[in-house]
Image (tube, rainbow, N blue to C red):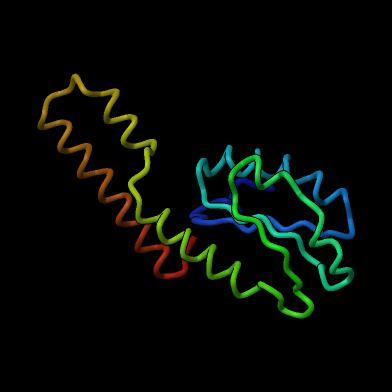
Length: 143
C-alpha cells in the first residue's frame, strides 16, 4: 500500500478471509509493512467469514499469538464480533495516540543536544507550532 494510507493511523484491524488461505499468508507481509510505517501501532487480527463454516473457529491461527495481538473470529455478514473489534481498535488507538512516543522531531532535538538553550527553545517552539498546525488540519478534515 502507498505510505499515505498510514498517515495519522492510530490503530489497525488486519482481516483475513477464512475461506482463502492466501489472505492468511499475506498477513506477515502486511504486518511488516505496517510496522515499517507505524511501529508499535495497536493491531487487532480478525478471521472473517466464519458464518460460512463455524467449525473454522476450532482451528488455531498462530499469527496473532506469536505477536501477542488480539485475535477474533468475525462475520461481517451476520455481525458476529464486528462491533467488539471496532470498539477495541478505537480504544486502543485512543490510548496509543495519547501515549508519548519517540518521534523524528524529538530524535533531532536530542541529537542537537550540544546547541544553546535559546536555540533549542526556538526549535522546540517551531516543532510545537508544526504539530499544532498538523492537528488543526486534521480537525478540519484536511490532509
